[in-house]
Figure 1 (cartoon, helix red, strand yellow):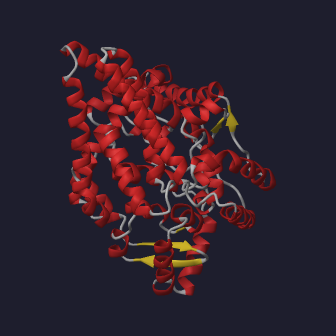
Figure 2 (cartoon, rainbow, N blue to C red):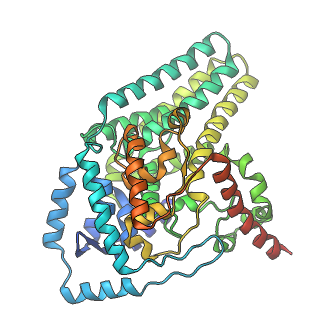
Figure 3 (tube, rainbow, N blue to C red):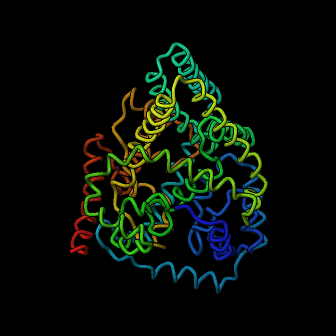
Length: 455
């Protein structure tokens, strides 16, 4: 959703100061500590929850992060009595099922066994060197992008305008995967290098704000398919994924759009190209308000973010300027932007929208490995799909190990499948048509509820 700067700041203040559990100890962070968090507000998703494996997933390989954690565990530990009360409150949490909403009912004892088993898996992944980056692989991927953009320019210079627009749409999709990997700190062990290249590939080349993406996407990883926490499942007003979404249409324009929700499963595919327009508009709104953020990291990055997006749009309009007519400029812009949206959208909506959601503040947040596996569906792999989907057909493995380079995901999937079998968790993997059908079925169930309410 596009929010005002004032509204964003107020929401940030409400979420300041929190208690969480890390490595078996409960700690309390002050408001100033929360606002200084280098990863921004994603940390607030684990208020009164166990963030142990989420911390390890996000900060693998970061010596600085582990030093800061050691200091926090030493200076901010909560008293024994309060810690016991927090543990008791966690055990009492229960979920209520609804349409497209599942109940998490794994016992505390099984949770603990699962956490120990996952720690063994994590250590095995580290031992195999799969968390050490893959510099040469990503140098090659950057070369691929440069080659694609060179083809775009060559085709346009030879008056193959439509072909040029199509190749640009594909290049922007592939740039999205590459920027995503730099934002996850996958390519190099030096995080500053990853961040700088993330700015170049994301803001300048792709037109998406790096910081907006991190804020949105890290929150998605931290609370995947958790209602009121994962923004990726809040698609109002275009789509409603759960019954409570139908109560969000309050403004006059939203009430008008709500009349179309009974048909959302029919227009879903046609709306996928809009994804790119939505993302770059959200990026512009976010980046040009970063200087007002409560979070220090965003204020510090604001100028670089804004300059990066300014460079991107200058290049876009410069390219359009060299086209022969206004009609061709409009057509070229529409084809390149819409195709990039379609190619990205059919991937990013597959893995999680096709799976049930879980209630806000579900106890599932305390079980990192179950959270990622129960809310994620993989797509059947192949050489072409691994390239075309940017490795995101291994979405389960990516969510368990977000800093792991995509070139290691196929081998990692073998270990994850065995882990799931050993721990009684269903490993979801299907062909595209099956997952697409599940997605439409989720939309249709809410469409039927909306249709009844419209009568």
